Image (cartoon, rainbow, N blue to C red; front, side, top):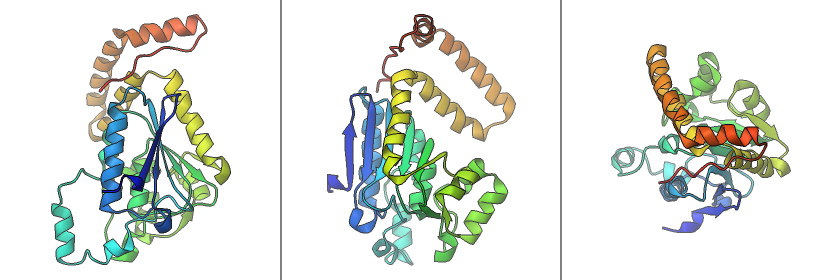
Length: 263
């Protein structure tokens, strides 16, 4: 497997950057790219040097979906072989304990858009185009998109985007809740890195990890269960050194010195 299909970098401020790197195919999704991307996410999740992760694409696009050469071979037995493959679930990024910040630099569709929904926060370049496209390829709402999209947009908007498979821009994506921020393309990566850097330098890695556990886990339970677990987690957080450091650094008017999350 070529390691070049996803580039990786760790900055001194604790931000790890992953770049989907098939620019000649606009970073179209393949099994090789998926394996390398997930492997690097796992490495960053275990690294004490990384506190926040930014994901972007090389060249003009972020990811237009599955590589068409791959799609043409998936009919009949091919689809069954894909389903039986030994691979991490496409929702694997939701299990990463560190904040995932997307810098969506261009066209984002199909499985590429599903992967974008797995980011915790999404920045998008002005004018970037999005589409789920599934219905126009004879497919269904793939890879958990029917679960996560309504939680971002509301049910009626999710129905519109999935059933029509229409193209929409980053500006509409912002209104719909699909992305959080829209910036000029030339400012996109810097904006996403600045956001991630602020988290890396000023937020407790343990607090972030627990919050992600709450946000995604509590989407599956009733409010009383969520409240009971949150009360337990709150008591645990009050007993941690992170809480003491957070208060002390605020009183002393200095940046906090939170320990890394650890492996």
